[in-house]
Image (cartoon, rainbow, N blue to C red; front, side, top):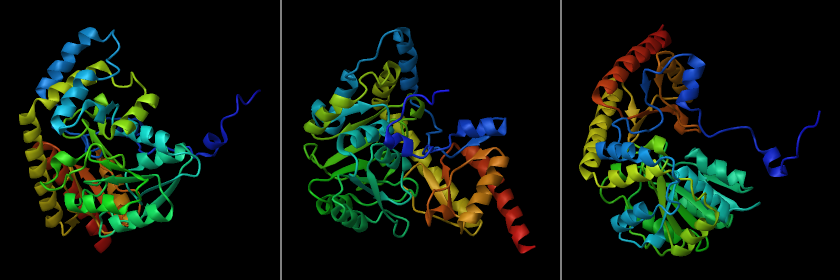
Length: 372
């Protein structure tokens, strides 16, 4: 029997892997639904009611293709950020945007720089286009900006990836630090500044960057504070020549019509965004109090999750397994030393209370087993 058409050497040599194990896959393995879904950093406070109404109304036109230019949404985003429409590209989430950046700037042998243990989808795309990853370890549980800049110079990197605030730690750098970092990286490198969690961050986190600067692409999403992760919609802010290059290679019907209408309505509901941000801040304090009551520490967070330091990767894995047996989905960072933590997504008060009860029970049972 024929083995079928040959794959490219690059694809043949890639490992059979995906960046994440989805909670849906965990439910299939368990054979039952999860009680608490606290690992994917979705907004468990839901989307704006206006967004839901707009998306329901748009279903009447679902037989039609969505606007490939996302014209209305692009215009609203340009007004929001004080830039021109030529500075905006709308994509099916930041993951799609990372893929466009890799396709536009990475070829076989090209170096790309990131942190060791940072958001893995960037790595997935870089390797998928034949690039070589250069990774700097975290320093004090935060991105080491100097080490990232040094690597970018040493390997003549074309892409530098930085999430601010960071995933999976939740830590962040000030706007001033990011602006200085941009000046330190090579002039011919492109910084992919992932700001998926920026709405949760304190004032003074988002840097001032000229939209005409070809060395920076800012990435934003509707998956987090807007509560539309399943709609798959995000956008990039960059120089017109960069956005124009993306228009040459992007999937023009990749952003569906329903998502476009929901995003447009959500932008207008600032009160909902304010409520979500306030609820997340309250929830972070609850998780911090929970950890403290058990003698544990948390990493500083400017996101909609908290990383709880449980002391070792072995203990983190045991806790993850025990929580999953109880129907609670959380995640742990994938690389040391961050893998000594478990990462818990913010949730409404009743879900936080359920998590606290289950986590206390598991922690005390493991603590008793260790002492016995």
